[in-house]
Amino acid sequence: MVTIGDSFAVVAILGGICLSAWALMISVALVFPSKAVNARKRIAAKPWASFFTGMALWLTLGILGFGMVANPLPLAKLMGWTVVMSLLSVASVGASGLVLLASERLRALAPEMTSYSSIAKSAAVIVTAGLVPLLGWFLVVPFLVFASTGAGLSALMQRSEATNEAPRFIP
Image (cartoon, rainbow, N blue to C red; front, side, top):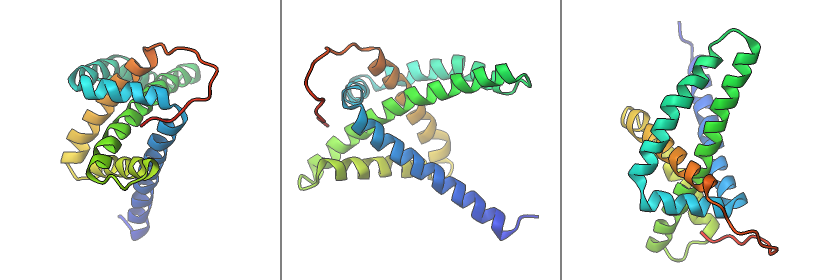
């Protein structure tokens, strides 16, 4: 039997996940601006290549990682969680690039917005799009995760020149 408390718990868990994803996208975009800009360029230039690269990563390493998580041995479980969390970390870099791309397009529509405001609103729109029943769950979220993983991998594999100056945020 489902009680009202169970329903509230599910809603609270979903709200916490969405709030955490929103904050993660914003923080990665602000803390690692050069990698986020590289991911933005990759998603803007080659969205389907990013999608298929991310899908290939999740279908190989993701299945391997979740298979190891299901293993009862503690070391295998630890290695599985390490693989899954590594993939999600790469996806967060790509998602920050997607947020910068959406922020850039949002600022073109409303030039009076500040950089932070447009980044926060863009991240909220992306997270909210994944909440739409059925379409968001089974189409938007997988596409965003796969494309973000592919763009994040590309951004992390690019070398950037070492400089002595403080990094500058360029959305």
